[in-house]
Length: 192
Length: 275
Image 1 (cartoon, rainbow over the protein chains, first blue to last red):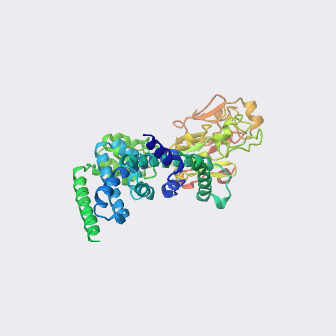
Image 2 (cartoon, each protein chain N blue to C red):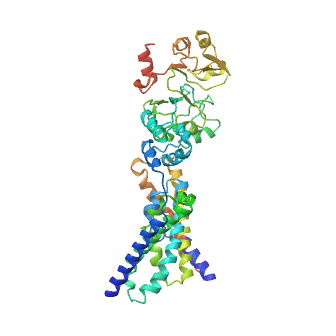
Image 3 (cartoon, rainbow over the protein chains, first blue to last red):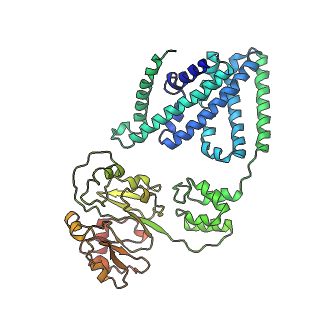
């Protein structure tokens, strides 16, 4: 139990998927302009990361290891995650239209996102158990959402700031993200 | 090596077949009219209809036909075509436009150095303009307009009639409620929103409405009434004769040009009306 807590805190703060691993930067800058869209994207990422962690772990353990083809995990995971997200999309579109509307366009957008893929591969690399992987996936999603929400708050404020012309929009967003990442570096001093 | 090919191949085939089966099983029936209607809708997602996107209006219109009245951005012919698809007959639409009810003639009360938005400036001591109803000029309405119809020229804002559809996005954005939605066929407009007494208005603003009632007397149709020290035009009665424009000593009442003239501006207005 304590172990899971360490995994969760580690994935949210210390090894934040965006600000520590620098994964998933495309949606991080793409949809962080407004808090509302950031929240939609964040919830979709939490959902997909949890599911992807849950499904890639058994595939790796019970399919790739017995056949001695661990080196194929990247290809296999892409296939598995993409298929799975497609399937989930169909199911919730049919049975939960409100959820489908909320997650909307974000679901297919993150199907092939490197953050999702990164979490699945990191789970294997760190040798987590099944429960550990799911918790890690969920927490990484929370960490992504946290970073996205912080960034959207900053960018909403940046809209009104008097930024030099050549730095307007994306350049200043990158600078802000770098400062945010520096701030998150402080968490790496945390040891359990 | 062989195992890798077989395992990945089998996985791919299983997933492919599974997805094909799932897409049949979980197929959602979409009304074909929805697609046609959403193609005809402007696609600007201005949300003036109360829905966040045009696509969602299209979905709702199929269920409740009269919701199509909510779309103000739709061009006349595509609107009629949508009515055709739905099999309903609706009369001619009322077309509206937004106009800014302030001529920015007020003097400044103090120098403002805060955040560059009207909403923020409005919070600081009732704004930096001497007139607490005056336009603050940071252009929240310009940013809010989904059609790019509002333009800032000097200290004033002008609405491009070719682009404006009266969606009232700017009305909600203006912290001072200065923007009015009026009939597109309106000929004259009162560019002031101050209910202050005439004496106060005259002191702080060159072009504000003092409520002197000259326009009320000049109007033969009795279309102008001064209420709360502010002239109000009843567009049902107004025939656009322009006598109020001549009667107004402060230049508060201005002519609105038909849509071919597109952009109204102070300078253009003066040149073209020759006064």
